[in-house]
Image 1 (tube, rainbow, N blue to C red):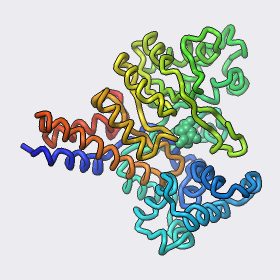
Image 2 (image 1 turned 90 degrees about the vertical axis):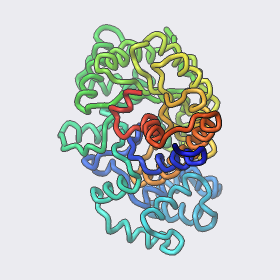
Image 3 (image 1 turned 135 degrees about the vertical axis):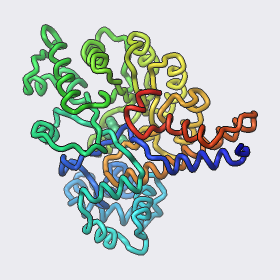
Image 4 (image 1 turned 60 degrees about the vertical axis):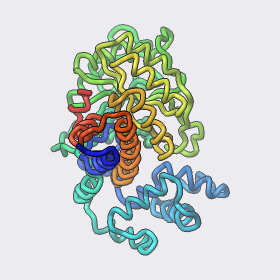
Length: 414
Ligand code: HDL
Ligand code: ZN
């Protein structure tokens, strides 16, 4: 029987060493070529760091920055956020973690030395390096058939790398309807701006076609803080309840709702221009109540919604809270959210996804999160032991794999 003091260490080691599946990323199978981002210049020009360099350089003209080459943008970011200032932000520290885990020394090698390392890598070889260092078994991509470049690869067909699973992303088709209608029609789906006639059947056909073509794990959509359900005035609610959810039920897939994004509050920052707003958690309770046989993977962008989502998940077993998303993916908030979720939901949630856009980020986003989640989980086992229940090592490993399973199918069975 292990002692009380061992359980926390066993939990931390379990999180540190277990292979796991990454529920939501923007990474791509290498078959997607240029869409698959990797390397130091992509790491440095990640939109999180772009937002930060503009704060470091209020004099920097934004449009002039965008005209710079990626290499020059990276030089500027490195100089401002790593040389002239210590890289203390989570996004900056992440770059340091990646460089160090690759066996390089960011201060000794400098940007030139780091670039020389990457010059010696191949895209496919580097995928093996990153998945090995991060100990990731598979990632789930974010796939959009209405993105012309991505669709062309799907339509041409390719030998899939089993480490890259698919998720059908719905924003471009369904958000701000009828903005997507023309593009759906362009693909041969009979849809009308007023949702009349064959439209909902046409959207269901689009969803079914692409869920099958991609072998999608789930369908996902990001939603504004104003998202409400029920809402008889909303075309989006019609599309969700009469197209997305019926297809999810038919295909036996969950629907991922990612709520709280205020798009492009500062358009000049492009991808870095989105912000956050507190949303109405009762909307997902209402959906869970109306569709008890459909599973909803739910994450909110606002810290303020975290507790209410935990309570909602206690009321509706078809709600699965997941991840510390985007602006919440920081140590202080990962600790707070994971403790809150363990206390309210036990093992009935998915603590983290990486949201990586650049392949190398798998290394740091999971290094940082494994340590944090392991610490919080370890504290909970210590609390449990103090209360009189000393978990066995095998039980701790079993529990950890429930929280962060190594494969998608296992994620489905909570
Ligand atoms: O909508 C999303 O999936 C978000 O994750 C956005 O892609 C966001 O820009 C992002 O990369 N967050 O980390
Ligand atoms: Zn994302």
